[in-house]
View 1 (cartoon, rainbow, N blue to C red):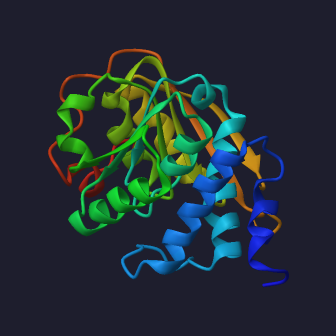
View 2 (cartoon, helix red, strand yellow):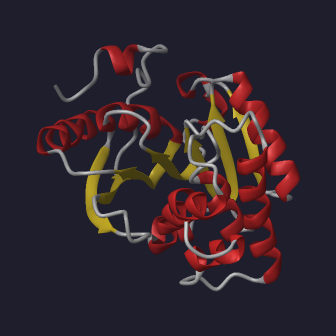
Length: 234
């Protein structure tokens, strides 16, 4: 990579963060690079600033996230987009939903070391997180699963009027059609698909926004594993 280690701040140059927030972002990057338990292959500071931080902070372009008081990050993994959004939006409560215990331990350490007081780890399968049902203004997910599956995970967690903001790569016409059909079963409506380019190499990024327009039927989500095994909208 070109430039020095401090070049990572260039990835955030389009945002107006204070010194405290920049220190938190720096702590996130240091933890990614230094922890042997970081569940990502993108760990070098400058590359991670683009691939993780800048990519996650695209969410700030969406009113549905900026205005949310309660946000759930599904399959949080290494903590994105949830930890980056928590730093950017310190008045927003963010829940990092992750089912693998080792990843949960990493996330707790990451939040502690970066001083992210408004993010909490929920170590559970999303289908089993009953406390989150209809409790969230926004649900976010980044490259988690086929979109009909993500919709089934997200819809029960959202308040009516809330939104799923789903980070994806290149558009897939068949999957998008299946997602719209799945949304009809779940009380979700596609509002927008927006092309984004958070850094120069990200040429095929798209963010999909679905709004919850009606109550999700009580039978959803189905028991753990069923959304992937028999996805809706097919």
